[in-house]
Length: 327
Ligand code: HEM
Image (tube, rainbow, N blue to C red):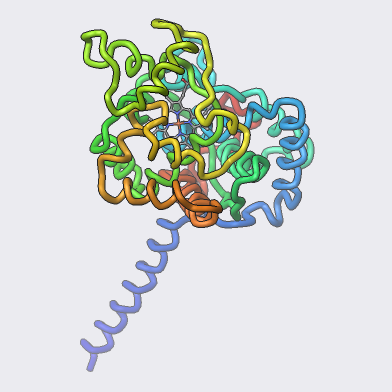
């Protein structure tokens, strides 16, 4: 009898411990995290974003990209925003040199600090801004989860190993997404963000001029498109920007999938989506969709998932006062 009591007591303690562990593993990212501490947080972000996009609509792509580049390196902890006086931060690393929009995040942060000082993390600002620019460009909206804390570390070398390069093949892309707990569906869905924004010629010019080192072109890129791109990008051009979705860089829609299906997407990593049965089928499906609805719904789901990558919550990290430096 006594041993029965003892073992049911032990089971109870185990259950309590399990519930505790489960809770802290899932710690605290939730919709409306600032409901009590800064009820107007999301409205303040939106107000600033409306002002910014009115005068600088071309920042929508760069601002969406910032969240991706943040989440893939040390998780979504705003490490991408930290400055280093010696040029050793993530933002100084080659994959991040074409990022823009930092000053917008500073502006949003300043507005939030005025209303609720020391409450809203820079990592959450990046997540909310990514949602708002997507919605503002007529793409989907989603209920964004918040509760991230800001990291204190930023390393030059980490973007090089954590961010997929533009020349990544499908197995590299799948492996890198998998290492962030993101699936092949997340890969093909999130790549749809390339419906917004521009690219430097240097991110794809090897496909036009020197694909295998013999002065050749990439056979997986449409030859008429190559002729057109060569007129815009001369060999070695480091400056010119090219619209990734010509004519629609400021509208979030499913046209990225039409470009990939027609072999007119700019990066090898885009073309690589045709090299896996699952991602190829998704590209084909969305390329003929008359409205963006399933892609839109998928995009919100995958963005929330990306927004959970290796987050700091609870008492980890800090809430920075200024997004570019640790407190
Ligand atoms: C799958 C792997 C990915 C690769 C290899 C990749 C690569 C690139 C490259 C090379 C550029 C152009 C940079 C330049 O030359 O200026 C770019 C731009 C962009 N990327 Fe990605 N990307 C990937 C995934 C994503 C994801 C997941 C998102 C967001 C959810 C995203 C959003 C963007 C946006 C919005 C731009 C345009 C930025 C601007 O207008 O300045 N990308 N990407």
